Length: 307
Picture (cartoon, rainbow, N blue to C red):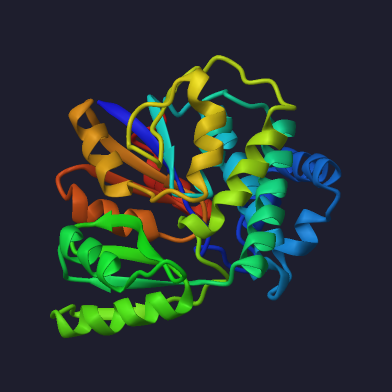
């Protein structure tokens, strides 16, 4: 049985996420302090701050830090992992877990990513919306229909059948939401986000992040990782291109899971705050074994896996 770890994406964060791990495993607090020095921010204090934890400048490094700590503890306990993927931000945790980057590099990369995405959101304001119960092709057609040269909206997150998130200028997204409702969408709702993530409005951020990423050494992977941008396995020579394109390209999560199933994965463990990916997995592959490790008490559910 092949086991995959999937890392949660931005939006799943909550106050005190990961604190129970830090308080239960002494060496994790030591590592968190080391991470704080690398990032030049007090991570434990930020995890307890109900405002800053939702500020993208802090959310992204906080989530990756927590996901890394939980992952490494699971490996320390003896969990055997055959492959990884991550949802948007979570892909950076996967880049670390599969050994493309060391801890120092991945933390610096995610901090820069957060800064560049915030900058792009200010320079190119936008929004996102979730469309439920329409086919992917119907939503894609709606996006094309309402987009203009100055206001673009695109499919951004392919979550599961009948659940697709769109992203673009606020005007175009609002028009797409209205049209989706007219075409029979069960729900079409604006999301509370700070920018048009995974859309062309983030392209400049991707270019700058790739330039920054060239400063860091890329290692040979020890496990396979599936890309957000095309749902295929990531090769070492594609890492910089993936880092650039991932910010402005759609997240093909549904297609990634479908490819992992074809490759023999039958057990999936979501690592990180919340249970968003766990819910999507149960829709995409109800026959698979699906676990979630968000809180320290969730480890009890893995007793049969970790011998």
